[in-house]
Length: 79
Image 1: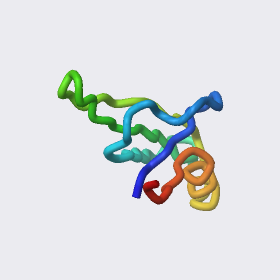
Image 2: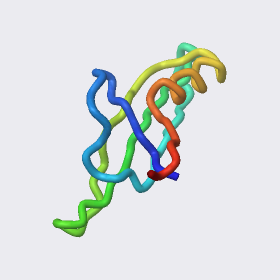
Image 3: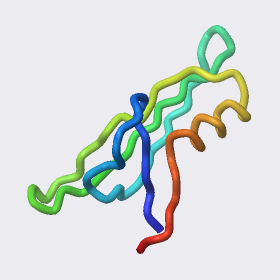
């Protein structure tokens, strides 16, 4: 399986294969949930892991959270 992400501005898929996606959730004082999605890729030439911001948003429900994930992260079968 391969992960593919879209940043806040639609763009072509990441140039490097994504190793994993990290999701951070935090409760906010106004009752909303802060969501941060990041991808980590491995740069084979530099031999280092590189973090990329996918999206930072606020949601009010799990439904909105899942919609946010679906709109920015896809799992596709390798070719």
